[in-house]
Length: 389
Image (cartoon, rainbow, N blue to C red; front, side, top):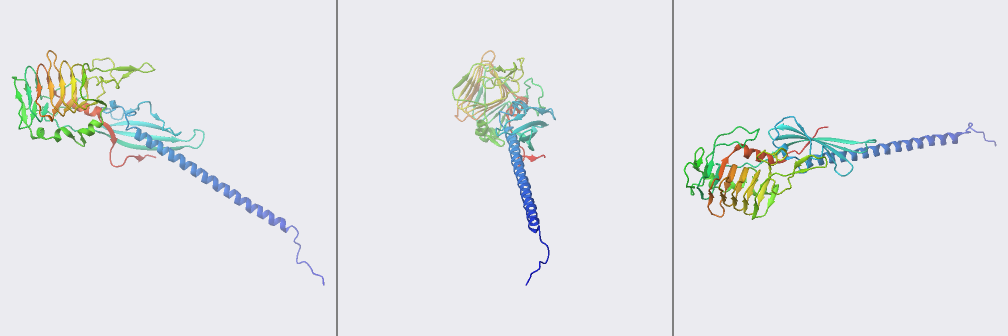
């Protein structure tokens, strides 16, 4: 019996093979496209993560002494854009880069914008821009007079203590809040005044319970004495003597002079008598871990002395002085001179004294300038930064 074909099927296998090739090709192309997209997404994620890391690096670097300039602390020209130390471009060291700009907002506040970049300039790039509000962390000294003392003190000779607010002769001083007592003392230890008319102020002397409180000499707002000492720009051992405090300068490779802050006897330039002004804005925090003796020259900033302070000769210091022990301020001819405020806790129960031609004058400007000039930047608020785009 002969069988007949139901139809002609020549070429069917070829059609199936072509269809299979098309399907397989489509799958390969789809897989390749999907893997390419995954690669690009992964690469872009890495680049964006590196850019974000670079931007965060820039914001955190702005808090460091290597980038932040103390001269910015007293800037009042709102809107001014400042250039960090070494330029605005920072190198995190992982192939990315960061551009940092600091804008003065006034009142000790700053807007810091950090823009991080990653990737080749010829290929894909990541970019993140973060902004942070910075404010200055400042101690809040509770000066009760030109001299605030917990223990006994004696003033004699031709020494002078002035509670009247005195200008150090600098520009941009804040308005005076008024005069202070010449001496604010512990009610149980009134000062021994052996000279006539040598103490002035509003009033001349004043018994003050705050002068008897140890926190006045150890707690300064949200900072303690030890915390402030940890921020010290210069730290010296007990028994240190300085005979001639004076500013010092160096010259860079381009021939530009700059203030040499590493020089131990350079405590800024309060006299403003030198032609180069770069040390005028230098207000160091000086911490001495024991006794300190000063016999000449001039300096400015915040002076913290764990032991006793002995100042004589023609030494001049501008700013707040906190002494844990006692002070001896003396000198014939051009006696020692302090402009700002002087506090002594008298922890050793010895008597502080002033004699010769020594002078202590209260000065809001000297105290405020030293506090602002030595303050440390910190993030303002509970959130460190915001993403700007």
